[in-house]
Amino acid sequence: MALSTIDPVSYANSEDYVTEHIHFEWNVDFDKHIIYGSVNMTIYNVTKNGKEMKLDTKSLEIEQVLINGVKVEFKLQEEKFDFLGSCLIIPVQILDEKFTVKVCYSTTDKCSALQWLTPEQTCGKKYPYLFSQSQAIHARSLFPCQDSPSVKSTYSAQVKVGHEFNVLMSALKQENPVKEGNYLIHKFDQKIKIPSYLVAIVCGNLEGRKIGKRSTVWSEPKMVNSAAEEFSDTEKFLTIAEELCGPYVWGKYDLLVLPPSFPYGGMENPCLTFVTPTLLVGDKSLTFVIAHEISHSWTGNLVTNMNWEDFWLNEGHTRYVERLIMEKYYDSEKMRHFLIDIGLADLQESLNAFGKDHPFNQLVPNLVECDPDECFSRVPYEKGSNLLFHLETICGKEQMLRWLKVYLDKYKNKSLTTEEWKNFFFEYMTSVEKISLNVLNSVDWKEWFEGRWTIPVKHNLNREFAVKVENLVDKWIQLKEVTDTDKRILLEDYQHMLPEQKYYFLQVMNDFRCAKLDHNVLDVMGTLYGYTSSNNSEILAGWLMLCIHSTYMKTIEQVFSFLNSQGRLKYTKPLYKALHNWPNEEIKNRTKDNYRAMKNSMHPITANMVQQILNQ
Image 1 (cartoon, rainbow, N blue to C red):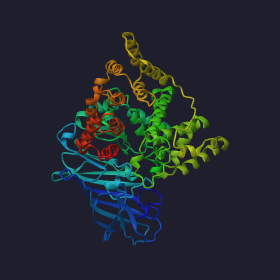
Image 2: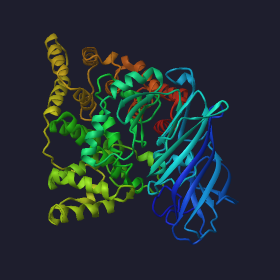
Image 3: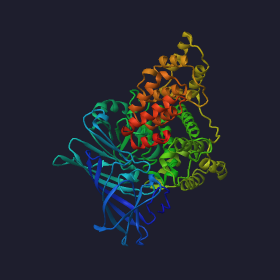
Image 4: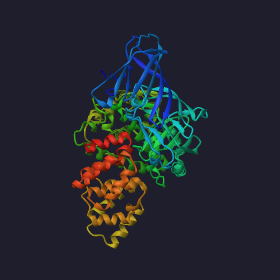
């Protein structure tokens, strides 16, 4: 089966047919762990040539297909790559400019976009819980669609579920739910075009707390007050983002704190950002994640990459805007430079993890016959934002800020390729900002987009915050025995650091350049800095990784306890990989046993990635 000419991981023939609007009629069945009902698509007939229409599906039970209300025959054709799912082929004999395609169907227990949680897996322990996660190509397991970011449509929905549940979606709720026996019907409308991966749903025992004029934070009741306090600066971030990017067009900006199995730090679903509970640390030190997700309201949701090979257009620009927001929030260019420093360390770590000359180190990788989940890393985030910062150093910051607004306005509600992005960048900078072609051509564009290692660009960063951390790292690396005087100095240095510096300290300690630490030194560090009793997931993950690198057995129970208490990929993947590489067969076997025991409570995306690490 031929794949799309636009997207190497989609069957959809969007050169012939384009989805303009989707209406969902869904029933949520917690007993069977399925969503069933229908999806009704308004299709724009691009070529009017009466060809077959192809949709992406994965592990769906298709009951019937109707075109303009008339039942038609259909067929499902599978390919050799499981991650692509099946192609739903629908005969089209209509030459009208627009027509409707209705598919009646049900999800199955193999739906990779949904996680169903038992009451025991929730905070309240009383009600089950359901949430979706469709990026990159999991929407096809939730509903038949043109599952490519190149296709953007509006959507509406009515969701029928038990009266004890609240329902939220990546759209605006239209009215109070309508009662129907023991069920409630919730209605939603998303009037701005979005790609399929941004269709999101959550059902559970949810409460909301207003945290701003256009923001409410939602979670299970036990977490809602702490979440409201942690994210109380959301409106400040939104206001700064509007100064940088233009008006916020989505109406509401709500936040949903999910159960711990949610695999990402955040997911930028329009009107309802999903976030991990690992951000709830009590000091707002991880709220830069919210700045990142808010930035996606423009870079990603409004202006979107054409396909997943161009993913850096989403994440690189979002990281760039996020750090501009944090600079204004802290009123400190020094802080922005420090965050860029941290990002470069993250980039190096990802490059090392893939290995030199690995194709996934490319900013624009080739994803033919490749699952986008497999190449997920910090490369599109950090190499992408690093490219934009490099362009800022040669074109000027004010010039880049003006370009950003024009770029976002020009391509709003559209998807574009890297080539289109580059062409517009050249056009704008030469014609509006009067930057010479020689300056723009001095950039090694081929190396930036296709290079498989770091690019040696010397940025004039203010490294004051970073140097203080690196000096403290050097003191620890050189220690063999720790005196009381050493403890006092090491503690004073650490206590005077910002939370972001404390995170960077563990990041650098875990850097590939650092040798294993003496176990006596680790004893002192863990006690002195309170790592052994920390409830801050960012701190704890860094500390436990450091202990694994140094084969420090005292924390092994804490490692497994942490792994089993959350499912954020940022922590879970590297910890499982490090345990799998532990030079001790007993630990390796225990790691595999732990995965097998926990697999069913993991998010499907997480379970699949860990399985690949362990070769289970």
